[in-house]
Length: 369
Image (cartoon, rainbow, N blue to C red; front, side):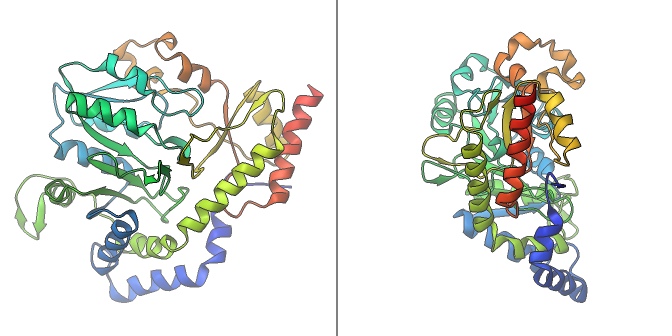
């Protein structure tokens, strides 16, 4: 049996007519940049999140950068974020001229450890970027208390957690703004790069929209110098179709994750992912901790099971951040996790038969070793 890590073809086949029709409509209307399809998606996405503003942008990385810039983060500032994430969470800080400051993770949840944030705050700290990694909500209550205590901005990196919830509130609605990626493999994915910003702050929304559009809200009227980061019409039309199904897809992901957990319960050599109390995990990724991880991944590959590692090197130990002079001892939980984490196949169309095949082969590997 061959099991892909993500099966985008299966999702497309299930909704082919709707998606093809949406794309054709954009072509017929030649509405390739901005226009009604983008406006419609922004309105629907904001409504579904219960916020006042959604700004479609080119990708999730740009979304973080734009928010940071429009909040005034720049040279001489520091921004706190988590040690284990994709580099977008930190490189955007550097791009503003500010310094990324990394914090270790909670070992059970892989998100930023709120108990370690305050020790990293200085008089240069301007903001915190918690990352809702793998679809798991970060522990937002203590994060917001710290931010309020020190008068810091909070930008939620929600690239992997579309419509996840923390204590009956959608993640992305706690901070000053939230950023999203619609990269094709995400829970809500376009067919190319795409991203968005949501916020209830009207002034910030206008600034972000302006900055993302060459510093202009009206053509040829450039109030500031900006960048070119616009959600295109075809991606918006695709996202409009998929937005109707995201809640069902998230429920299927959770169901698949719970099935994995059930089949792997108490199996020696594997630690299954935990779900934070009073939270809804949307399982963008299903990440186990495994002994002899690399050998296991090769074994599963031989059995036709595709896996991945998110992420093989924690951010502070990447060559890009050598100048910060960090060591593994600075982030013991994240460093230990990077040697054990393995992402198993996860998507809404994954079948119980496929999950059983994966888990049976996991058990065979450890039993035979």
